Amino acid sequence: MSFEKEIKRRRTFAIISHPDAGKTTMTEKLLLYGGAIQMAGSVKAKRSKKFATSDWMELEKQRGISVTSSVMKFPYKDHEMNLIDTPGHQDFSEDTYRTLTAVDSALMIIDCANGVEAQTKKLYEVCSLRKTPVLAFINKMDREGKDPFELMEEIENTLGISVTPVTWPIGMGDRFRGVYHRLDNKLLIYDKDAERSRPVPLKDLSLDSPEVVAELGEELAETLQAEIELLDGAGDTLDRDRYLRGELAPVFFGSALKTFGIEPLLEGLITLAPPPLPREAQERAVDPMESKFTGFVFKIQANMDPAHRDRVAFMRICSGKFERGMKSHIVRLGKDQRLGRPTQFMSQDRSLVDEAFAGDIVGIHDPGVFKIGDTLTQGEKLHFTGVPVFAPEHFARVTLKDPLKSKQLNKALDQLSEEGAVQVFRPINNNDQILGVVGVLQFDVVQYRIQHEYGVQVTFARLPYSAARWIFSDDEDALDEYVRAQSHLICDDQHGQKAILLDDLWRLNFLKERFPKIEYQATSEKI
Ligand code: GDP
Image: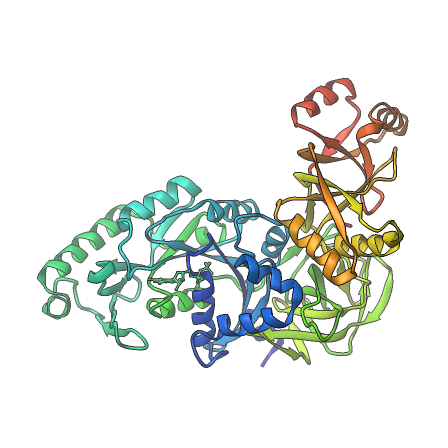
């Protein structure tokens, strides 16, 4: 297959949803259609097997949540699908944001009874900022839920995106009979007992034809006809360019649990969702079709396999072709390195990759050299942008139970901060170590990991700060004066960059007036 074709057939996407909307079930069914797993249920089964063997995933099990995100690859109709799982718990970690920087599109799953929920809204906002195209799947149609028109309005009003249903439900709950595919003009009849839906192709048939009435009965057929007329008359038409610009969400209805409505969605992912897109670097935009390999690290995960206490750096390939054994240039370090054990993830299984293309996600063995945001190339000095570190909103002072273990603690904090699991701030005035996180649950994860992976007992004392801002100035004297005046609040972050801790953001307005030459940043792009 030609190089261009290889890249064009890739789709790299993430699922965004509120907990319990059906992300795990959907993932399982997508993998099932892709033939990557044999039997529905195995994603969960395998996960729980992994939980039992991996101790920090044990924490996930205890809490019944997914703390980390994983990457899965599956084939579908000549396409290579890369699905990146986003952590779905209430709390929000930077991992979630960064995962969304590695995809070209998103699939938003909405529970038909609950509509647009808080976590969906938050995740959608990240997509919207990045203008990521979004497909929506209204799930659990086998249960009673909100009126579909009401749901469409809710999505438009709460998320501020236009919608266009590609499939439209016929009844719901006990009366759920399937969906009407508006583009293909066919009914997909839901058969409670069948493994897959039974499509009734309606090419060239009008919706009021006897075949439709025979299939659905007069009442449902009439309702469907009236609803489709309403949609055709008043709704947005499917304009792929608007979808690609992130302005319009094509919507699908179905039931992940009953494996209904998944095929039209997969079809949508291959016909509508974008292939790998160009990506901005500080120096220039990089096109996926460029022959030279480039990529960036968006996630570092420790201890995925308890047998190897090493780390895996997840790299999104942005252009060209990556081959096993290839030397890569790590731009930040200015050095070439052979990437060890490049791995892809089929369902939950790992396999070594011989070659990978733009759009693919490859896990590489990390002996401790990579940092989040690192750009890898074949020599060119490029810095991909858009993988920011976000200012933490929760802070705690870390205290050692055994003072003799400070070396181990420092090692743990260095590694965990490189992974992006926590940010470390060191006050310029004293020897404290202050940890900052975006989502408060992350403190538990970090404490657990420091204890279980590094054997260090620590306690955290929460601090009253609610924000941090990185500080800059073109005027060095002004910066010095500022740092002196505010020294009780100034810290060095893990890269030596100065930041100020704030108890509330009002204080910032006051500081801006008093020290007009100082600039503040809520994200620090890692360079
Ligand atoms: P996640 O938290 O988003 O990963 O959600 P899960 O996939 O774990 O689903 C949460 C619950 O909803 C589970 O009990 C599922 O069996 C159930 N569920 C998922 N999809 C459907 C569906 O289409 N219909 C019904 N009735 N239940 C579903």
